Amino acid sequence: MTHALRIGLIHLNVQYKEPEQNRAALVELNRKAADHGAKIIVNTEMGVSGYSFTGRQDVFPFAEPLSGPSVSALALIARENQAYIVVGMPEKDESTGIMYNSAVVIGPDGEVICTYRKVNGEARWACPGSENQNPVFKTPWGRVGVLICSDAYYGLMPRTLALQGADLVAVPSNWPPSGMDPVDLWRLRALENGFAMAVCNRTGKDRLMDCADAQSCVIDHKGKALLVESSQDSAVFVADLPLLENGKLASSRRRKIMEQRKPGYYGEIYLDLRMIPDQTDWLNLPKPGKIRVSALTGGDIPGLLQTVLMGGGDAPRLAVLPKNFTQDNPVESLKNLANEHNMAAAALLQENGAPAMAILAEPGKIAQTAPFSSLAQNPDEPLHTVDFGPLRMAFLEKEALKHPEVSVSLAKQGCDLVVVSEECFAPDDYMLMGGRTLDRLALAYSSHDQSGVILPPEGHGPWTVNSQDETGAASIVLDTASLRTKRFQERINYSILLKKHNHQEE
Image (cartoon, rainbow, N blue to C red):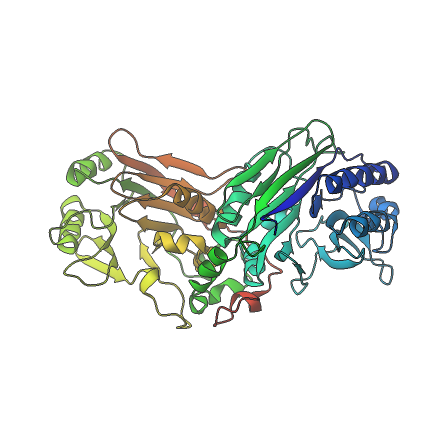
Protein backbone atom coordinates (compact mmCIF):
# COMPACT_ATOMS: atom_id res chain seq x y z
CA MET A 1 0.00 0.00 0.00
CA THR A 2 1.34 3.42 -0.94
CA HIS A 3 1.98 5.79 1.95
CA ALA A 4 1.92 9.10 0.07
CA LEU A 5 -0.71 10.91 -1.94
CA ARG A 6 0.80 12.74 -4.89
CA ILE A 7 -0.65 16.22 -5.40
CA GLY A 8 -0.27 18.10 -8.67
CA LEU A 9 -0.59 21.90 -8.92
CA ILE A 10 -1.04 23.47 -12.37
CA HIS A 11 0.66 26.85 -11.94
CA LEU A 12 -0.61 28.36 -15.19
CA ASN A 13 0.37 31.53 -17.02
CA VAL A 14 -3.28 32.36 -17.66
CA GLN A 15 -3.96 34.36 -20.83
CA TYR A 16 -6.69 36.94 -20.29
CA LYS A 17 -9.78 36.29 -22.44
CA GLU A 18 -8.06 33.49 -24.36
CA PRO A 19 -10.07 30.38 -23.37
CA GLU A 20 -8.92 28.19 -26.27
CA GLN A 21 -5.27 28.88 -25.54
CA ASN A 22 -5.77 28.36 -21.80
CA ARG A 23 -7.76 25.18 -22.35
CA ALA A 24 -5.02 23.70 -24.52
CA ALA A 25 -2.42 24.54 -21.88
CA LEU A 26 -4.59 23.09 -19.11
CA VAL A 27 -5.01 19.83 -21.00
CA GLU A 28 -1.27 19.56 -21.65
CA LEU A 29 -0.26 20.37 -18.07
CA ASN A 30 -2.92 18.20 -16.42
CA ARG A 31 -1.74 15.28 -18.57
CA LYS A 32 1.81 15.99 -17.46
CA ALA A 33 0.76 16.02 -13.79
CA ALA A 34 -1.10 12.74 -14.25
CA ASP A 35 1.92 11.22 -16.01
CA HIS A 36 3.95 12.16 -12.93
CA GLY A 37 1.54 10.15 -10.79
CA ALA A 38 -0.60 12.94 -9.34
CA LYS A 39 -3.95 11.59 -8.14
CA ILE A 40 -5.37 14.94 -7.04
CA ILE A 41 -4.67 17.76 -9.48
CA VAL A 42 -5.57 21.33 -8.57
CA ASN A 43 -5.75 24.11 -11.16
CA THR A 44 -5.77 27.85 -10.60
CA GLU A 45 -8.82 30.04 -9.99
CA MET A 46 -10.46 31.21 -13.26
CA GLY A 47 -7.77 29.35 -15.18
CA VAL A 48 -9.93 28.93 -18.28
CA SER A 49 -10.63 32.61 -18.88
CA GLY A 50 -8.49 34.96 -16.85
CA TYR A 51 -9.74 36.96 -13.92
CA SER A 52 -10.34 40.72 -14.05
CA PHE A 53 -13.65 41.19 -15.86
CA THR A 54 -15.46 44.52 -15.74
CA GLY A 55 -19.06 43.29 -15.61
CA ARG A 56 -21.60 40.65 -16.56
CA GLN A 57 -21.49 41.40 -20.27
CA ASP A 58 -17.70 41.33 -20.25
CA VAL A 59 -17.46 37.83 -18.77
CA PHE A 60 -20.53 36.34 -20.46
CA PRO A 61 -18.79 35.10 -23.66
CA PHE A 62 -16.21 33.24 -21.55
CA ALA A 63 -18.50 31.57 -19.01
CA GLU A 64 -19.25 27.88 -19.52
CA PRO A 65 -21.82 25.42 -18.20
CA LEU A 66 -20.63 22.32 -16.39
CA SER A 67 -21.15 20.43 -19.64
CA GLY A 68 -18.89 22.85 -21.53
CA PRO A 69 -15.63 22.19 -23.37
CA SER A 70 -13.24 22.77 -20.47
CA VAL A 71 -14.82 20.26 -18.10
CA SER A 72 -15.28 17.78 -20.96
CA ALA A 73 -11.61 18.00 -21.98
CA LEU A 74 -10.31 17.51 -18.44
CA ALA A 75 -12.83 14.73 -17.74
CA LEU A 76 -11.00 12.56 -20.28
CA ILE A 77 -7.73 12.99 -18.38
CA ALA A 78 -9.37 12.26 -15.04
CA ARG A 79 -10.97 9.08 -16.39
CA GLU A 80 -7.86 7.83 -18.20
CA ASN A 81 -5.68 8.33 -15.11
CA GLN A 82 -8.17 7.58 -12.32
CA ALA A 83 -7.45 11.04 -10.91
CA TYR A 84 -9.41 13.85 -9.31
CA ILE A 85 -9.11 17.21 -11.08
CA VAL A 86 -10.16 20.58 -9.63
CA VAL A 87 -10.52 23.31 -12.25
CA GLY A 88 -11.41 26.99 -11.78
CA MET A 89 -13.65 28.74 -14.31
CA PRO A 90 -16.49 31.22 -14.76
CA GLU A 91 -19.56 28.98 -14.58
CA LYS A 92 -22.80 29.84 -16.35
CA ASP A 93 -26.08 28.40 -15.08
CA GLU A 94 -27.97 27.99 -18.34
CA SER A 95 -31.37 27.83 -16.64
CA THR A 96 -31.00 31.27 -15.01
CA GLY A 97 -28.13 33.07 -16.72
CA ILE A 98 -26.49 33.48 -13.31
CA MET A 99 -22.70 33.32 -13.39
CA TYR A 100 -20.36 32.12 -10.66
CA ASN A 101 -16.66 31.97 -9.95
CA SER A 102 -16.53 28.19 -9.59
CA ALA A 103 -14.21 25.32 -8.82
CA VAL A 104 -15.41 22.14 -10.51
CA VAL A 105 -14.24 18.76 -9.23
CA ILE A 106 -14.08 15.93 -11.77
CA GLY A 107 -13.87 12.41 -10.35
CA PRO A 108 -11.92 9.41 -11.67
CA ASP A 109 -14.99 8.29 -13.63
CA GLY A 110 -14.93 11.56 -15.57
CA GLU A 111 -18.09 12.87 -13.90
CA VAL A 112 -18.51 16.13 -11.98
CA ILE A 113 -18.71 15.17 -8.31
CA CYS A 114 -18.56 18.60 -6.65
CA THR A 115 -19.03 22.21 -7.71
CA TYR A 116 -17.96 24.94 -5.32
CA ARG A 117 -19.02 28.51 -6.03
CA LYS A 118 -16.87 31.22 -4.48
CA VAL A 119 -18.68 33.02 -1.67
CA ASN A 120 -16.55 36.16 -1.88
CA GLY A 121 -17.46 36.38 -5.54
CA GLU A 122 -16.32 39.14 -7.85
CA ALA A 123 -18.93 41.84 -7.21
CA ARG A 124 -18.85 43.15 -10.78
CA TRP A 125 -20.21 39.96 -12.30
CA ALA A 126 -20.37 36.89 -10.05
CA CYS A 127 -23.20 35.69 -7.83
CA PRO A 128 -21.85 34.67 -4.41
CA GLY A 129 -22.08 30.97 -3.64
CA SER A 130 -24.62 29.75 -1.13
CA GLU A 131 -23.62 29.06 2.46
CA ASN A 132 -25.51 25.76 2.14
CA GLN A 133 -23.45 24.35 -0.73
CA ASN A 134 -21.55 21.15 0.01
CA PRO A 135 -17.87 21.63 -0.89
CA VAL A 136 -16.62 18.30 0.50
CA PHE A 137 -16.24 15.08 -1.48
CA LYS A 138 -15.04 11.57 -0.68
CA THR A 139 -11.86 9.98 -2.05
CA PRO A 140 -10.07 6.70 -1.23
CA TRP A 141 -7.72 8.72 1.00
CA GLY A 142 -10.38 10.60 2.96
CA ARG A 143 -12.60 13.63 2.55
CA VAL A 144 -11.39 16.60 0.52
CA GLY A 145 -12.85 20.11 0.72
CA VAL A 146 -12.73 23.03 -1.71
CA LEU A 147 -12.40 26.77 -1.16
CA ILE A 148 -11.45 29.49 -3.64
CA CYS A 149 -8.76 32.10 -2.86
CA SER A 150 -10.10 34.80 -0.51
CA ASP A 151 -12.73 32.43 0.92
CA ALA A 152 -9.84 31.17 3.06
CA TYR A 153 -8.99 34.65 4.40
CA TYR A 154 -11.42 34.58 7.32
CA GLY A 155 -11.45 31.58 9.63
CA LEU A 156 -15.06 30.38 9.72
CA MET A 157 -15.36 28.98 6.20
CA PRO A 158 -12.30 26.72 6.53
CA ARG A 159 -13.59 25.66 9.95
CA THR A 160 -16.88 24.44 8.45
CA LEU A 161 -14.88 22.18 6.11
CA ALA A 162 -12.97 20.72 9.06
CA LEU A 163 -16.27 20.00 10.81
CA GLN A 164 -17.49 18.27 7.65
CA GLY A 165 -14.54 15.91 7.85
CA ALA A 166 -12.14 17.43 5.32
CA ASP A 167 -8.56 16.29 5.90
CA LEU A 168 -7.31 18.02 2.74
CA VAL A 169 -8.56 21.31 1.30
CA ALA A 170 -7.93 22.25 -2.34
CA VAL A 171 -7.74 26.00 -2.96
CA PRO A 172 -7.62 27.36 -6.53
CA SER A 173 -6.32 30.93 -6.20
CA ASN A 174 -5.43 34.17 -7.97
CA TRP A 175 -3.43 35.78 -5.16
CA PRO A 176 -0.75 38.27 -6.21
CA PRO A 177 2.36 38.56 -4.00
CA SER A 178 1.57 41.83 -2.26
CA GLY A 179 0.37 42.69 1.22
CA MET A 180 -0.05 39.74 3.55
CA ASP A 181 2.01 36.70 2.60
CA PRO A 182 -0.71 34.21 1.59
CA VAL A 183 1.50 31.25 2.51
CA ASP A 184 1.36 32.42 6.13
CA LEU A 185 -2.42 32.59 5.89
CA TRP A 186 -2.70 29.10 4.39
CA ARG A 187 -0.33 27.70 7.02
CA LEU A 188 -2.51 29.32 9.67
CA ARG A 189 -5.66 27.64 8.33
CA ALA A 190 -3.95 24.23 8.25
CA LEU A 191 -2.51 24.72 11.72
CA GLU A 192 -5.76 25.72 13.42
CA ASN A 193 -7.91 23.07 11.71
CA GLY A 194 -5.61 20.08 11.47
CA PHE A 195 -6.10 19.53 7.74
CA ALA A 196 -3.66 19.65 4.83
CA MET A 197 -3.96 22.25 2.06
CA ALA A 198 -3.15 22.18 -1.65
CA VAL A 199 -3.17 25.74 -2.96
CA CYS A 200 -2.76 26.35 -6.69
CA ASN A 201 -1.92 29.94 -7.55
CA ARG A 202 -0.99 31.24 -11.02
CA THR A 203 1.70 33.14 -12.83
CA GLY A 204 1.71 35.85 -15.50
CA LYS A 205 -0.16 39.13 -15.76
CA ASP A 206 -3.91 39.56 -15.88
CA ARG A 207 -5.68 42.75 -16.91
CA LEU A 208 -5.04 44.24 -13.47
CA MET A 209 -2.97 41.75 -11.46
CA ASP A 210 0.70 40.81 -11.72
CA CYS A 211 1.07 37.25 -10.46
CA ALA A 212 4.50 36.57 -11.96
CA ASP A 213 5.93 35.91 -8.49
CA ALA A 214 2.82 34.36 -6.93
CA GLN A 215 3.38 31.14 -4.98
CA SER A 216 1.59 27.81 -4.96
CA CYS A 217 2.01 25.48 -2.01
CA VAL A 218 1.20 22.19 -0.33
CA ILE A 219 0.93 22.30 3.46
CA ASP A 220 0.55 19.35 5.81
CA HIS A 221 -2.00 18.98 8.61
CA LYS A 222 0.40 20.51 11.15
CA GLY A 223 0.92 23.69 9.13
CA LYS A 224 4.31 22.68 7.71
CA ALA A 225 4.93 23.77 4.13
CA LEU A 226 5.93 20.74 2.04
CA LEU A 227 6.13 22.75 -1.18
CA VAL A 228 6.27 26.49 -1.87
CA GLU A 229 7.03 27.34 -5.48
CA SER A 230 6.67 30.10 -8.03
CA SER A 231 7.54 30.28 -11.71
CA GLN A 232 7.63 32.98 -14.36
CA ASP A 233 6.25 30.46 -16.86
CA SER A 234 3.55 27.81 -16.65
CA ALA A 235 4.70 24.90 -14.50
CA VAL A 236 3.53 21.68 -12.91
CA PHE A 237 4.45 21.36 -9.23
CA VAL A 238 4.22 17.96 -7.56
CA ALA A 239 4.33 17.13 -3.85
CA ASP A 240 3.83 13.92 -1.89
CA LEU A 241 1.49 14.23 1.07
CA PRO A 242 2.26 11.51 3.64
CA LEU A 243 -0.50 9.00 4.38
CA LEU A 244 -1.08 6.79 7.41
CA GLU A 245 -0.32 3.07 7.38
CA ASN A 246 -3.91 2.42 6.29
CA GLY A 247 -3.46 4.65 3.25
CA LYS A 248 -5.62 7.44 4.65
CA LEU A 249 -4.96 11.13 5.22
CA ALA A 250 -4.07 12.06 8.79
CA SER A 251 -7.20 13.01 10.72
CA SER A 252 -6.51 12.59 14.45
CA ARG A 253 -5.21 16.13 14.94
CA ARG A 254 -8.23 17.64 13.21
CA ARG A 255 -10.58 15.50 15.28
CA LYS A 256 -8.87 16.50 18.52
CA ILE A 257 -9.13 20.20 17.70
CA MET A 258 -12.79 19.88 16.77
CA GLU A 259 -13.53 18.00 20.01
CA GLN A 260 -12.03 20.90 22.00
CA ARG A 261 -14.56 23.38 20.61
CA LYS A 262 -17.19 24.89 22.91
CA PRO A 263 -20.05 25.94 20.61
CA GLY A 264 -22.22 27.10 23.48
CA TYR A 265 -19.98 30.16 23.78
CA TYR A 266 -19.98 30.97 20.07
CA GLY A 267 -23.58 32.12 19.66
CA GLU A 268 -22.66 35.69 18.75
CA ILE A 269 -20.97 34.54 15.55
CA TYR A 270 -24.30 34.39 13.69
CA LEU A 271 -25.18 38.05 14.36
CA ASP A 272 -25.20 40.08 11.14
CA LEU A 273 -23.45 43.37 11.96
CA ARG A 274 -22.67 44.44 8.40
CA MET A 275 -24.94 47.49 8.70
CA ILE A 276 -23.29 48.70 11.93
CA PRO A 277 -20.54 51.15 10.90
CA ASP A 278 -19.32 51.69 14.47
CA GLN A 279 -19.93 49.27 17.32
CA THR A 280 -19.59 51.76 20.18
CA ASP A 281 -23.22 52.79 20.67
CA TRP A 282 -24.77 49.62 19.27
CA LEU A 283 -22.97 47.41 21.80
CA ASN A 284 -22.78 49.96 24.63
CA LEU A 285 -18.99 49.92 24.59
CA PRO A 286 -16.76 52.24 26.58
CA LYS A 287 -16.21 55.57 24.91
CA PRO A 288 -13.27 55.07 22.52
CA GLY A 289 -9.95 56.65 23.29
CA LYS A 290 -6.28 55.99 23.85
CA ILE A 291 -4.78 53.51 26.29
CA ARG A 292 -1.16 52.50 26.78
CA VAL A 293 -0.91 48.72 26.60
CA SER A 294 2.32 47.10 27.80
CA ALA A 295 3.11 43.39 27.68
CA LEU A 296 5.87 42.40 30.10
CA THR A 297 8.18 39.42 30.38
CA GLY A 298 9.08 37.84 33.69
CA GLY A 299 11.84 39.05 35.95
CA ASP A 300 11.89 42.53 37.46
CA ILE A 301 8.18 43.30 37.15
CA PRO A 302 8.26 46.42 39.39
CA GLY A 303 11.19 47.78 37.39
CA LEU A 304 9.43 47.11 34.11
CA LEU A 305 6.33 48.86 35.38
CA GLN A 306 8.41 51.94 36.15
CA THR A 307 9.53 51.89 32.51
CA VAL A 308 5.92 51.59 31.37
CA LEU A 309 4.97 54.65 33.41
CA MET A 310 7.50 56.80 31.55
CA GLY A 311 5.49 57.04 28.31
CA GLY A 312 1.98 57.44 27.01
CA GLY A 313 1.06 60.85 28.37
CA ASP A 314 -2.21 60.93 30.29
CA ALA A 315 -3.67 57.79 28.68
CA PRO A 316 -4.81 55.02 31.04
CA ARG A 317 -2.36 52.16 31.37
CA LEU A 318 -2.77 48.41 31.18
CA ALA A 319 0.09 46.02 31.93
CA VAL A 320 -0.15 42.38 30.81
CA LEU A 321 1.95 40.04 32.95
CA PRO A 322 3.01 36.40 32.50
CA LYS A 323 0.94 33.61 33.96
CA ASN A 324 1.88 33.09 37.61
CA PHE A 325 4.42 35.93 37.43
CA THR A 326 5.10 35.31 41.11
CA GLN A 327 4.60 32.36 43.43
CA ASP A 328 4.10 34.61 46.45
CA ASN A 329 0.37 35.40 46.79
CA PRO A 330 -0.01 36.21 43.06
CA VAL A 331 -3.53 37.69 43.25
CA GLU A 332 -2.63 39.99 46.12
CA SER A 333 0.64 40.89 44.38
CA LEU A 334 -1.26 41.86 41.23
CA LYS A 335 -3.63 44.05 43.25
CA ASN A 336 -0.72 45.74 44.97
CA LEU A 337 1.02 46.45 41.68
CA ALA A 338 -2.13 48.04 40.27
CA ASN A 339 -2.64 50.19 43.36
CA GLU A 340 1.00 51.20 43.69
CA HIS A 341 1.37 52.25 40.06
CA ASN A 342 -2.18 53.56 39.54
CA MET A 343 -2.78 51.35 36.52
CA ALA A 344 -4.55 48.16 35.52
CA ALA A 345 -2.69 44.86 35.53
CA ALA A 346 -3.84 41.61 33.92
CA ALA A 347 -2.60 38.04 34.26
CA LEU A 348 -3.68 34.43 34.46
CA LEU A 349 -3.04 33.36 38.04
CA GLN A 350 -3.28 30.20 40.11
CA GLU A 351 -2.76 29.88 43.84
CA ASN A 352 -3.26 27.32 46.58
CA GLY A 353 -4.00 24.56 44.08
CA ALA A 354 -7.19 26.24 42.88
CA PRO A 355 -8.02 26.43 39.15
CA ALA A 356 -6.33 29.28 37.31
CA MET A 357 -8.33 32.50 37.00
CA ALA A 358 -7.97 35.44 34.65
CA ILE A 359 -7.52 38.52 36.83
CA LEU A 360 -7.80 42.21 35.95
CA ALA A 361 -6.71 44.39 38.85
CA GLU A 362 -7.43 48.12 38.87
CA PRO A 363 -6.76 50.59 41.67
CA GLY A 364 -9.28 49.69 44.34
CA LYS A 365 -11.07 46.91 42.43
CA ILE A 366 -10.57 43.52 40.87
CA ALA A 367 -12.38 41.47 38.24
CA GLN A 368 -11.88 37.79 37.58
CA THR A 369 -13.18 35.32 35.01
CA ALA A 370 -12.66 31.62 34.41
CA PRO A 371 -10.24 30.88 31.55
CA PHE A 372 -11.48 29.20 28.38
CA SER A 373 -10.16 25.75 29.27
CA SER A 374 -12.26 25.53 32.44
CA LEU A 375 -15.53 26.76 30.91
CA ALA A 376 -18.46 24.36 30.74
CA GLN A 377 -19.09 22.80 27.34
CA ASN A 378 -22.51 24.19 26.32
CA PRO A 379 -23.77 26.97 28.58
CA ASP A 380 -25.43 29.16 25.91
CA GLU A 381 -23.80 32.33 27.15
CA PRO A 382 -21.30 34.74 25.62
CA LEU A 383 -17.60 34.60 26.23
CA HIS A 384 -16.59 36.81 29.13
CA THR A 385 -15.35 40.35 28.52
CA VAL A 386 -14.19 43.12 30.86
CA ASP A 387 -14.30 46.89 30.32
CA PHE A 388 -11.47 49.16 31.44
CA GLY A 389 -11.06 52.80 30.45
CA PRO A 390 -11.74 53.07 26.68
CA LEU A 391 -11.26 49.34 26.25
CA ARG A 392 -13.34 46.17 26.08
CA MET A 393 -11.03 43.23 26.58
CA ALA A 394 -11.07 39.46 27.01
CA PHE A 395 -8.64 36.83 28.27
CA LEU A 396 -7.72 33.78 26.19
CA GLU A 397 -5.40 30.87 26.80
CA LYS A 398 -3.21 29.63 23.99
CA GLU A 399 -5.36 26.50 23.63
CA ALA A 400 -8.26 28.73 22.55
CA LEU A 401 -6.20 30.34 19.78
CA LYS A 402 -6.87 27.39 17.47
CA HIS A 403 -10.55 28.32 17.30
CA PRO A 404 -11.52 31.18 14.95
CA GLU A 405 -15.06 31.07 16.37
CA VAL A 406 -13.66 32.52 19.60
CA SER A 407 -12.20 35.68 18.07
CA VAL A 408 -15.24 36.22 15.82
CA SER A 409 -17.55 35.85 18.82
CA LEU A 410 -15.49 38.33 20.83
CA ALA A 411 -15.29 40.76 17.91
CA LYS A 412 -19.07 40.70 17.58
CA GLN A 413 -19.28 41.60 21.27
CA GLY A 414 -17.17 44.66 20.52
CA CYS A 415 -13.95 43.37 22.01
CA ASP A 416 -10.96 45.64 21.31
CA LEU A 417 -8.15 43.64 22.88
CA VAL A 418 -7.43 40.00 23.67
CA VAL A 419 -4.96 39.26 26.47
CA VAL A 420 -2.95 36.03 26.43
CA SER A 421 -1.02 35.42 29.66
CA GLU A 422 1.06 32.22 29.66
CA GLU A 423 4.22 30.76 31.16
CA CYS A 424 5.70 30.06 27.71
CA PHE A 425 4.80 29.97 24.01
CA ALA A 426 5.60 27.50 21.24
CA PRO A 427 6.59 28.80 17.78
CA ASP A 428 3.17 28.02 16.27
CA ASP A 429 1.41 30.05 18.97
CA TYR A 430 2.68 33.30 17.45
CA MET A 431 1.05 32.54 14.10
CA LEU A 432 -2.21 31.61 15.83
CA MET A 433 -2.16 34.84 17.83
CA GLY A 434 -1.55 36.88 14.71
CA GLY A 435 -4.37 35.08 12.94
CA ARG A 436 -6.88 36.06 15.59
CA THR A 437 -6.25 39.74 14.84
CA LEU A 438 -7.77 39.29 11.36
CA ASP A 439 -11.10 39.84 13.13
CA ARG A 440 -10.06 43.42 13.99
CA LEU A 441 -8.87 42.68 17.50
CA ALA A 442 -5.57 43.75 18.97
CA LEU A 443 -3.76 41.11 21.03
CA ALA A 444 -1.28 41.47 23.88
CA TYR A 445 0.71 38.39 24.88
CA SER A 446 3.03 37.83 27.81
CA SER A 447 5.17 34.94 29.04
CA HIS A 448 8.28 34.60 31.15
CA ASP A 449 10.56 35.08 28.14
CA GLN A 450 8.50 36.66 25.33
CA SER A 451 5.98 39.46 25.13
CA GLY A 452 4.40 41.61 22.46
CA VAL A 453 1.38 43.46 21.15
CA ILE A 454 -0.09 42.51 17.77
CA LEU A 455 -2.21 44.93 15.76
CA PRO A 456 -4.67 43.81 13.08
CA PRO A 457 -3.91 44.24 9.38
CA GLU A 458 -4.63 47.45 7.55
CA GLY A 459 -6.17 46.81 4.15
CA HIS A 460 -4.58 43.73 2.59
CA GLY A 461 -1.41 44.03 4.65
CA PRO A 462 -0.04 41.70 7.34
CA TRP A 463 -0.71 41.96 11.04
CA THR A 464 1.87 44.06 12.89
CA VAL A 465 3.90 42.62 15.76
CA ASN A 466 5.34 45.01 18.35
CA SER A 467 7.82 42.78 20.18
CA GLN A 468 9.52 43.39 23.49
CA ASP A 469 12.45 45.78 23.50
CA GLU A 470 15.69 45.47 25.43
CA THR A 471 13.89 46.31 28.68
CA GLY A 472 11.65 43.23 28.39
CA ALA A 473 8.47 45.17 27.64
CA ALA A 474 6.44 45.81 24.51
CA SER A 475 4.37 49.00 24.73
CA ILE A 476 2.04 50.82 22.36
CA VAL A 477 -0.59 53.51 22.69
CA LEU A 478 -3.74 51.89 21.35
CA ASP A 479 -6.59 54.06 20.06
CA THR A 480 -9.71 51.91 20.43
CA ALA A 481 -11.58 54.11 17.92
CA SER A 482 -9.52 52.39 15.21
CA LEU A 483 -10.93 49.00 16.23
CA ARG A 484 -14.63 49.82 16.43
CA THR A 485 -15.33 49.37 12.70
CA LYS A 486 -15.06 45.68 11.96
CA ARG A 487 -15.64 43.55 8.89
CA PHE A 488 -17.04 40.04 9.07
CA GLN A 489 -17.39 37.19 6.63
CA GLU A 490 -21.06 36.38 6.05
CA ARG A 491 -22.78 33.64 4.01
CA ILE A 492 -21.53 31.17 6.58
CA ASN A 493 -23.26 27.91 7.46
CA TYR A 494 -23.74 28.71 11.13
CA SER A 495 -25.74 25.53 11.69
CA ILE A 496 -22.57 23.49 11.17
CA LEU A 497 -20.53 25.73 13.47
CA LEU A 498 -23.06 25.87 16.31
CA LYS A 499 -24.11 22.23 16.64
CA LYS A 500 -23.70 21.54 20.35
CA HIS A 501 -22.37 18.00 20.06
CA ASN A 502 -19.33 18.91 17.92
CA HIS A 503 -20.55 16.64 15.15
CA GLN A 504 -17.88 15.59 12.68
CA GLU A 505 -18.46 13.71 9.47
CA GLU A 506 -16.77 10.34 9.14
